[in-house]
Length: 473
Image (cartoon, rainbow, N blue to C red; front, side, top):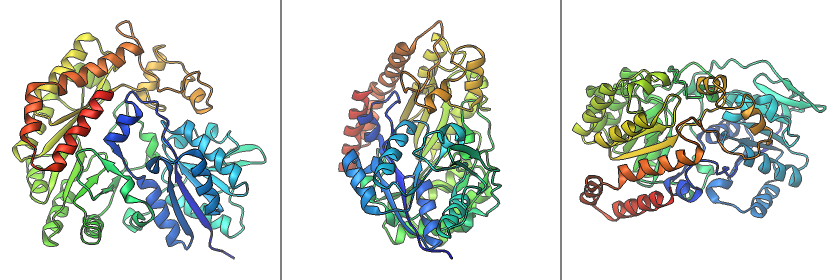
């Protein structure tokens, strides 16, 4: 017979192995894990008592984290982990094992989906959830609650008698409109913030998966699922809750490409107008996946900011990335966005395969030439399971077992790898990163635009935080 279980879902501290220091990273943003919020909502719908503990957002010391876990008396503890946070997740699970020795400890998220067997070699975990976790976690917890054998649930990897077993893949067929909305009432919303975003704000995803194949992007993190879309009605229903019940001033959409389906975008705009919902929002999209009609319609109903992946200032590198866009499309998208009054943010990578000093300088030049309000630069990382990683490995630029050793915590330095060539080593890449930020932000034009854009105290705080981030890079 099924019984009600106490489930604790944990977002542990991130391991600070990125080029940007932890202080700057936390100034830029601290956001809730939507994956955990969706899991919490579904498990609660299943009848379980669910608690969320975001140690990262609350910045909890280890002893406080241990006491909070112990006090929860959870029977099932679930961790989510990105690749950057994997070493810390192992640490957090060890704490849980010590204070709740009888709990079933489960791990899911992007890094588990990349190296499931290696992740489960750590005896602090009992099971792992591969790919999208809702149905799998729901069945797993249900079987634990009912006293059934939970070691054969599709979509999991488990430890059984000291042996790691990978169960059959789970085919996800569920309409994502059927998922309950994220359980935002279970988190301390005051712990979350993002530079340039006005509070109270809420984060959303309106689709899952991505149909594109950029060589640097680890789509396996999403389980390589077919792109699935929520209906416009379902999307606006969630926005309306945040707007009317919680007084949301801004919605941040984290879809890989929010504007993939024009008909859906236009219907969302129509529904927002019909329901008189007036909230700002920002979105991420590709320069080849949005047109002037969408820019105009979205701006009319509150779209304020658009994030665009440019990645490089030369077609040679863009083609090598498999990005599938042109610089003419980049310029048109930015110019159209500015025409309709959007704040624009562009993303750029430095140190990609084939990069040389000339292409690096051209990328920085293009970033400055575009009418961008903000630019984010990053050192290229050959993430596990990407075409980029495979190519760099085959060229002898990264060891074949780098990510395996990283997952097993056997690397001498638990750092993200970079691509060192005859042009630069890791130290020079970090100098190039700092140089790119300085060249973009320490310009009279940029500084003047920021100063003349000050309208209120929020703008001043936003500017000061931006300076703080720049000083820490």
